[in-house]
Length: 136
Picture (spheres, rainbow, N blue to C red):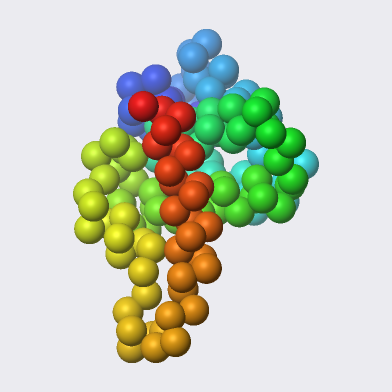
């Protein structure tokens, strides 16, 4: 099964991967190296290939700048993958609306009356801000 990343669409057919696809898949493999297989499969199966490549490139840059632990790397991949797959319906990160991002951050008061979501909010916000600054 091959994922074609170069044109922003993906096929699950028996097509031959291009050099670009091989490089993109290599980046995804390197970004998820040493993590649980579920992290890799979540990145390669649940979100669009373009967003998966953006996440992998972000992880690789962060690994170069800082010494990311496996747990933090897993959390970054899971957080951004969740934003991509559930809240923006796999549209490109650059086409996300403010409402999609805010709904990703916040929990309704009925579900969390004590506002315990604020710690998670700060963590997700930091991850997304770093990613936005990197790709601007």
